[in-house]
Length: 266
Image 1 (cartoon, rainbow, N blue to C red):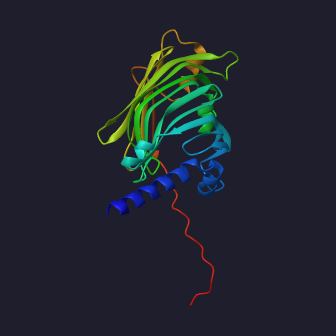
Image 2: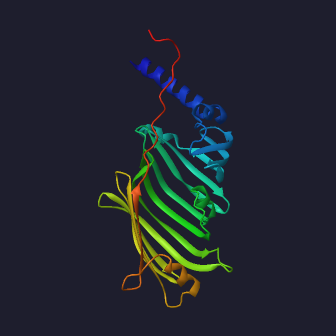
Image 3: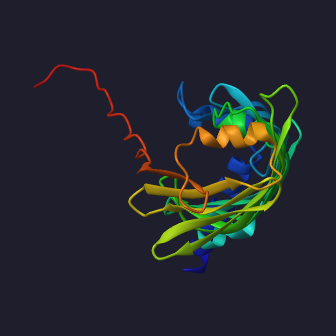
């Protein structure tokens, strides 16, 4: 019995070493996403245990650069492949811990990001003429089939400016606090400083439905061009607030393609 466990331990150590120390390009070649996938890695170096990539491609654009990771081998004992990550992208700095469990769930811990919002907008193909800085502090998030099932954290957007005007027009500072509430994930949104009085929330439900309600109005000292922009949102309520409501359902992940086999039918 002892000999059997010794042999099994040696085999596991060999497999672990072979996989984690193998050249990353070889391993990624087997698992590389198909053409047209949501993301891709370029400029790989190192190995699975400690390595990096020159860039992360999202939507045919480089969303992040200089991605670096270090594997946490002890997490394998609880069925997770976990990595400490850091990356940058056009003024955006990111760091945190990401783990993938054998059940298929993705777990994110202590994720922080700071810098310009431009690379984030570009990654999600949000071509909005807005500039400013982002500060993200995500204590934890779990995802199943690409859908967040739980999350806690805070996002701050500071110094937002509308860039389409002749001179950049200040929009102010905003924050969103994310927490689970009533079988949903809720982001409570508020305007912390600036010419706008805004508040609201966004909810993500387990069936992939989402709901957004934001009420917004210009303060007394808001610049006239901003007041005119808000008028395009429709008629305000009796307190002067314009209401933005959106709802819908996120698309489910695409099912794996069926395998194609050759050969004649019997």
